[in-house]
Image (tube, rainbow, N blue to C red; front, side):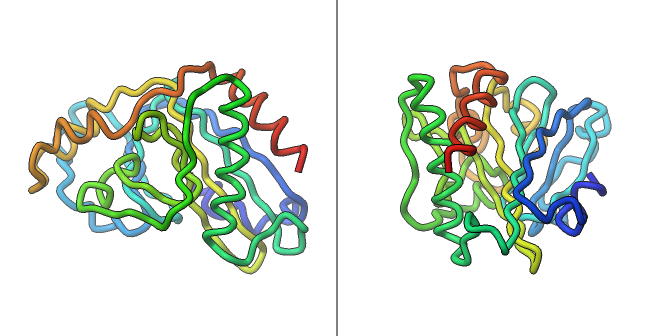
Length: 210
């Protein structure tokens, strides 16, 4: 994770670059604003042998389990014609690529084009929120997108749900003061209904056509 946090400064990222991240262990990944670890049940994390880390982009917590997520980072340097100065337009551009990739696999999904929708739950759990460019099936998120911006360009961190099993998230945040939190976490996400390799191929095809 440390290497990824500093990747946007690497010389090799002077051209548009795609990283496919393949985690080896289950991990709770906090958003940048969660450094104080709000309401986390640390004893549960330790008892389950989960790793705990944070990313430098914003948003709520993401549960990363090998085989459950397709995790792709895309870096667009500020010198590229693909770079968007406006944060929302950049998100919609990246989300549009994912949307077209999902549609090409006959996934009946929608693209969130309105402004960011936050709630106390989404401040804890990434997939409970709605941000520009994110993709949904029946109002349940299948693709979360966050951005890390620097003078070098924009790094998009994208997560596609292949299997939705939020049990660890439910237990980690079970003491948070949010009504019906277990049921709400359970229902905020869903699986995309496609395989990881299939989705990766579809995404790269759409990305390289731009």
